[in-house]
Image (cartoon, rainbow, N blue to C red; front, side, top):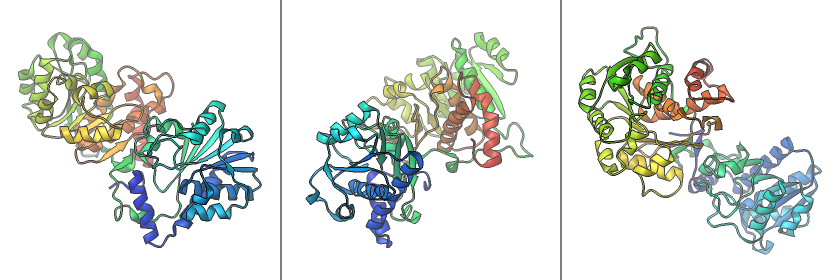
Length: 491
């Protein structure tokens, strides 16, 4: 079960708040702790300066009154602007409004003229409609003027469940959220509005996870999986014999995938490709075995040897009936399978044929365009679409992008946050497919292998730094793996 890195929906976070109250943690204390956490984060990151605290009509606004009181107590020049009628405030928000001893002005964009720092305490993650009126004016003015903005929970206008922008949202330098992050913090475009995101402990007992709240989504990281380490008694076959089905024309994709699989630990690598391309594959890397394969019957004959335990198709294989027949032949074998690019889009005219063939551990690795061709009817946010795709297909689905989502047929989902923009280079997806293949060849389950492969892929790119090309990613892996094994995490 996901715990420390869990992503909670707005509804789940509400249940966590109620569970904390039921366990004896007063909601007023939670609000005080939330406001304290934000005030402390502001004081740690910004010099003392005039600040506008923009308060909404609900509990997010109540947090704002706490922040205003604590900053004023430390000598900060504070202006409070309230959206709505103070007489309509209720509960803990009303209590903290009354504790604030200073003036309260009606919120409007003109209040920003003397405030180089803004605290956005208008709406929390549960906003169910587009920003409008004064709230919209303030959000747009913050962006137009390039003001420093600190969001309480999420930037107002960001849907906490989806990361979608509801009309407008301020681009914040800092977001302070509480207990656990929400999907909107890590999915784009919301993630781009959050700036630095600080997760604050406000006193909600961790035990509510698993008891009252059972999260099914998390931020990807090494706490969710374990990379196989070579043992002293291992030999090459024990570490898995991976197969990359390569193309006859675009050979680079298969070669990159093979390199990714070997660098991540696969004991042996065979490239199955048309005979005319064999010499190129053989010259590329002496550690690869190259076998001539022209059609599904050839591939089936090769795979009669059960030591070939993980197969990747779609890395430059060429879209069409030949590749589709190979995919169907491999899926019958109940081996570990990774399907990328053309291996997926070859079924664009009949996706159900592909889904019905999935039997064993299978991973799909589409980018957004490929995803839309085999799941053309799926709507909604990225997390929702990926989950439904996994449920429909029976495969683990890796929906690639800056906020890659990995979802399993059982409903589990992970959002990856380690993906430097340098990964936007030709061939990086082929390397990723090969890395997932190599992990599955070593015995990792499809969901765990997909999560680990995506995370390691991003960290390797980050470690390399600027100037990255796809060929660099596998070569950065040894240092990342060494750090992971030695210290429990990679820098």
